[in-house]
Structure formats: structure tokens, C-alpha cells
Length: 226
View 1 (cartoon, rainbow, N blue to C red):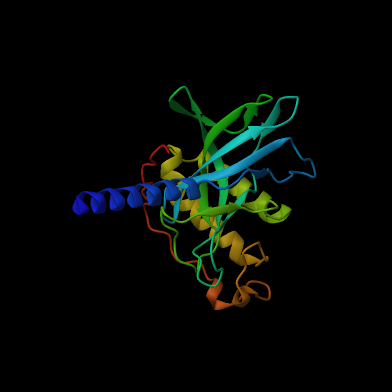
View 2: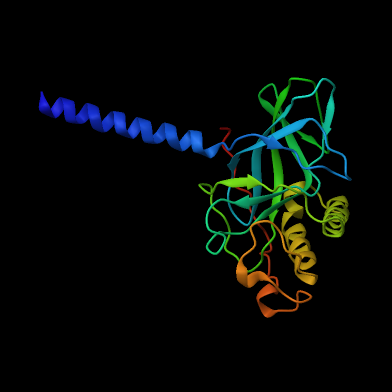
């Protein structure tokens, strides 16, 4: 009888821990940062990251307003949870994303969201800090309160669009886009949310900001639908 009780208690404990892990993976909803000074009645929450130097972040976006609103991922970035001094790279969205539609995923540049509707998206993201380690699948993230600064956002976006035009498909362009993101980021270092104390630089010329070479091919891990 005592053994059965022990097994039951251990099983219950494991179940509670598993549930708490699933619950903590999804952060609370926050307002989608304004774009071009315009704020939309949209809220977003982090759900999951597929891991690696370049991958996809799964998010939920909902419309709390009375009219349809358009979601644009340009300039959104994500800050790893935990101590910034030990945290891995921050992640910035670039290029098209995928929207879940009746069990399948469709490529989108923007998403039109109806009042009261919640959509699940996979944002293609790239690491913003070449000197930090790559985040893993268990890493939690928070949506930055503001988008990337205008000049940085425009340069990353236009460069990614140009690379995608000459690529056979999106995955084949990821390595080149990642190199472009690091090069742009390191050219003129700008302080972002989640900054470390030692990451301040003058003009981005410090050696610690030199971009590491991206591999010839970066294979995207298949994301598991939460």
C-alpha cells in the first residue's frame, strides 16, 4: 500500500511539473509595439522557439479592438528571459512569416486579423548578437516593448527582401540573411532591451562585435506545433 501511494505521489508530482512547464512556455499577452508611430489594437504572446542560430518563434496574436487590424512583424524582436549577462542572443523578425490556417501553414507578408480573432503565427527570426551563444528550444522569450530602431529596422528589412528575391526559396536564404543581420547590427551598435553591461560600444568597432561566419547552410529544425 505504501509503495502504491509513493508511486501515485511521484506520478502526480511529475504531472504537475509537466503542466507548469507547458504553462510557463506561453508568456502573457502584451500590446504589439507601434509601427511608424501607429498603434494597432493587437496583442501578442510568445509560445515557443524552434531553436538554433536561426529558427522560428511561434506566437499568438489577437485583436482586442472593434475593427479588423493588420499585423506586421517588421522590427519586432524578442528578449531571452533570465539574467542578460548569461542570456543567449536576442532574436529579430525578418522576412515573411507563416499563419496557421485549418491545420496547415501559409506564407504571409502581413496578417489581417478580425475583431476578437486570435491567430497563430510562426515568425522567421535571426540572432541579433553575434558574440552571444545561440538559444535552445527550452529558452523562453519576451516581446520587446519597442521595435528595432527605424534605421536598423529598415536596413535589415530591405536587405532581407533583396536576398529573398534572388533565392530559390526562403530556407536557402537564411544563412545569407543571418550574415546580413549581424553585419548591419555590428556596423553601428545600438543599445536594445536586454542589453548587457559590457555590450556598450563606440561606433560598433570593438572586436567583440565582429560577426562570426555563418555556416554555408543553416538547417531549420522542424517546429513542433504546441
